[in-house]
Image (tube, rainbow, N blue to C red; front, side, top):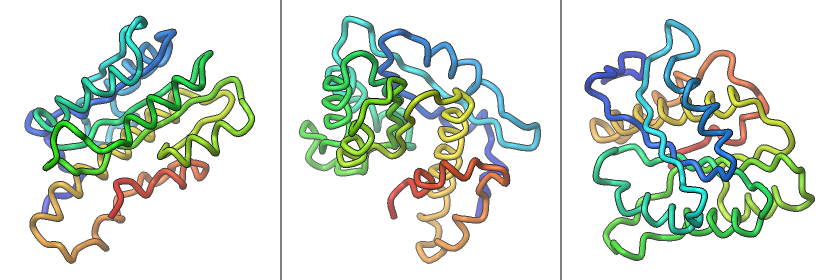
Length: 196
């Protein structure tokens, strides 16, 4: 069984991180943080960042990501969604992210995790986003390193599940043994991805 600490960056495919970020701030912040591991002993995972064009709607961008989703990466992509000035568009994008893939009836895989960021702290938006399937909601200021830490964790966990489950279906107890030792406790609600 291959452990996640032995990931080979030359062999393991990159994980797609889809950003719906009108201002482009999260793209700039995450590009540098995901390019290097936070500590020398952690595995180096490659990430491919895709950002929606400012004129493109979030739902059109999600549709484009869903079409290419299974062709390149076996790991489901992560959606980082900034609510920005229009939370209704952000919620529509989130809803389309979690909708079943109508184009491919055979592809009924679970959507990748979604991070919704609401820097303006709108009342009720976090609860509604969770109902629509957001994996983690950041309200107010969220440090970019926290978001990068979540993405790295999901990539490690998804890689481990992708390698372990086909070998032996009964080894679920082995999957939880590689949590980052100093992971922020406030992120605990988002750590149960992917769904079992």
